[in-house]
Length: 341
Ligand SMILES: Cc1ncc(COP(=O)(O)O)c(C=O)c1O
Image 1 (cartoon, rainbow, N blue to C red):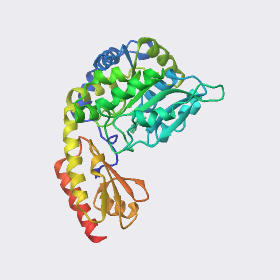
Image 2: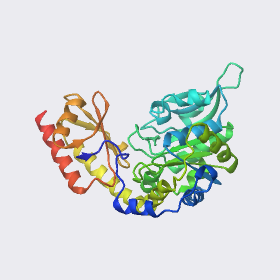
Image 3: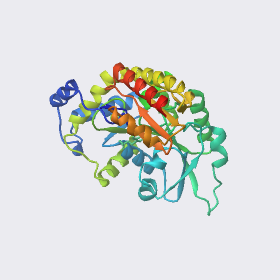
């Protein structure tokens, strides 16, 4: 099966598994897992943050970050396609007692011009705007990246209104490869950052919240409340370290393959694609003549899996276990489906 449903479907490689079995471990609830401690220090230093907290999922990283930055009855500005708005089970309302204010960004990208009019006044009856929640790269937005200039302008705006910035960096590694922006810069822009090792980097499990020391101390306690305190999870941190060391540089191949697929789809009569949105490893395209389900069914018969992203929208995501041969087969199959429709 050529599995393009998501970059979360990768399986640990034999080399990664071997590193995992050799990792020194301890009880991380006691703060005694050397492999986790080293990874937290390494990634926090990369992003110029004081501390990091290894968590089981990107969702927990986001929810802990937003919990830290808000009080009940606050409001978080975000894009309408954001993961925190669409795919975290309404967790912000439940865990932090806040509401989200979704805005119509382009490819999931917000700008100061969009954000500023949505910042509320501070009357008793207003939900208080407290946080700007950014996602980089954007998932539903098709893997688009923020520019450094836009991030700087958003940061300035946030400071002017005393707002915090949370960055959902589940795929920040892809953004770093595609734009050349260094991790440290994201650390200057955002107060809290959630990064994932389990997406394109290919680790089986694991994310990290990055923030200042006091916030991470609070987040650590809250992680326990949520049942996310793990014991000898250094096995997982070792996989994350391996992914950073050996898979990070491979992301550019995922981006190249995604760009090739997008250009080919652009030339197929049965499909429509916005090429400007394809900046990293995600390809989102529309079916013009039949429903997405019909195309997905034919792909599946050919051993290719993608996911529906709307009645006539399909998403394909590249990762390090998709080869150039897989890409060629996908292009040939989509070309045949296009001619048949
Ligand atoms: C942009 C984004 N943020 C957060 C997450 C949540 O990650 P997890 O599935 O590890 O909770 C995902 C998952 O795909 C994502 O795409």
